[in-house]
Each structure stands twice: as C-alpha cells, then as structure tokens.
Length: 143
Figure (cartoon, rainbow, N blue to C red):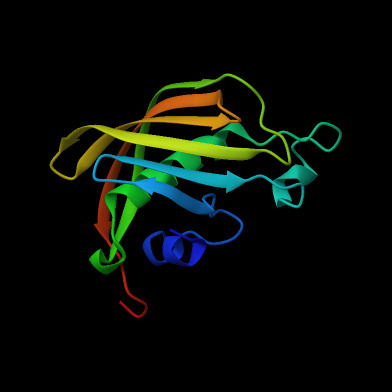
C-alpha cells in the first residue's frame, strides 16, 4: 500500500501523516514504514543540536498503522486513538532511520480493538506499546 492508498483510509495529512508505506497486511497483523528525514518540521526544536524523533510521534505512527489494519477506504470511517498501555521507549530514532511499525490485534470487543505494537530500526526495537482504537463515521464536508 503506497501513500496515496494510505490517505484514502487515514484522515491525516502533512505534517502528521506518519506512515509512508504498508509492506505487509492480513486480517490480524500489519507492517508499515516511516522514513525519518531531517526536513521534518519538529526537528527544528527537538532538538536542534541532537535531533531525535519524538517518542509521542512513534506512538502516533503505531496508532496510524493500527488504523490502516482496521479500516478499508470504502468504509468511510475514521480511526480513533483511545488509549495507551505499557508504552516503553528503548532507543532513540534519528534522521535517516527507517522506522518499521509492526501491529497485531490481541483483542476485539464491539467497536474497540486492542493491539500490540512495536517500532524498530534495523531490527532493533525502539518502542513498544499496547494501544486501544475505535472507529467513528467520517463526517463529509458540509455535514
């Protein structure tokens, strides 16, 4: 799945669209990547002399990846990020790194899904978390 297909599912756009490509996907698991570049706007302040990709954006990227697992373009739904459990940051992510997000469904009840997520760079785990997601109907322009 390329970025154009991703934007058919997720409502996010620059600078907060944090998934560049989906490289694997089935019913319960998805793998996506984010190319981290020095031109990202937040590197102006995080941190100018030692740029590191913000941990909250790693979590957001994992949540966006989970949204891509749960939804299809024709559904006209928006993923909602409902919660984070057991988040851990293990290593910094720097410009030039390729973040790989791996997300797997571990529980689903009604319209709430719990996933296990990890982010890695070159097979080195940089973050892990359990995330809760829901969905809502996408509001059309003019509604």
